[in-house]
Image (spheres, one colour):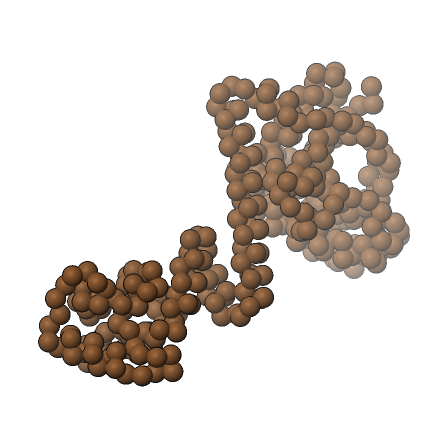
Length: 318
């Protein structure tokens, strides 16, 4: 038990009885003016801030809320009344399950920048919840043997895509590492496209083999560009970095389903691939190439429920 624990019963209103020394210490602290008014013991401050003394000690250790004064003789912590608002803000942010590092960033910044940080954090929470909601649907259908009902939620269509020249990067990667690599690779290719005559179509990702927690592809990111000669020159300038290539993508018919940003998460995105495969089989069509994801809108600005991706297979034209 530390010094504050011995003092909490007196100052937190829990009915404990103070020793003469504690009462004297408390009077001395309360009578000491500071820039923010008289000092409060940790128990009294905790009651005002609606936090436990244990939480206040944690926030002290992590630098979120340091006491205004620590008595060198007995180790008691004292706070100013003007620290109550910051303590209450910390408590509210913790109710959002915000990590301590995120809270520290919020309380360091005044006004609008702090509000933007909270909004950005909550967007991330909503995206995670939306993804988890689709995962629950996927698991319920799987476990109850109702996969066909799940597949029925995906509308399947076909489209004819003309031949295109693309710059690409390939990598072997597991499912956990895949989103970060796709984002970084697409950024590199979209930047490079400016030197290749510009982008002429939606970027896409080709899965040359299965990507799971145990299987690592490979995966190929592709950006259609206007100038094949410039694209080949750019590839030569890259040397062997990132397994970079330029190639012709043939004209083909795609069978596809359109999904939201929340659905572009492993493993629930597997349901979209399976739904397209089942539809292809029912239509008596053949698959003529590897599966792919076509990203036809800006990923970063999209909300969780916005459609962002076509899950597709090249198929015979019959």
